Length: 105
Image (cartoon, rainbow, N blue to C red; front, side, top):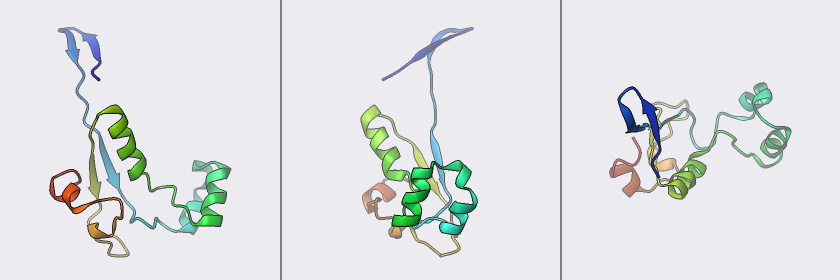
């Protein structure tokens, strides 16, 4: 799926680089952090977070589904040193082949 836009040089394909900074380990920042920022989330998300331990910051699987659906790729940059010393192998949605093939950075 390609789109074009008119510019001073005519119709050229748009080239976009999509990146994602992953600032939290899979378990998320913790309930106190989320509740202190509750205005960022719907009441439904807040209730799910409190009742089920849902992490509203964990969107990697959703992004990967969108990539597959719309045939695009993006790059994930993982924070090098978490407070909890989380290693890349702790991410349950990532396979070693994805990490080592350059799918994730």
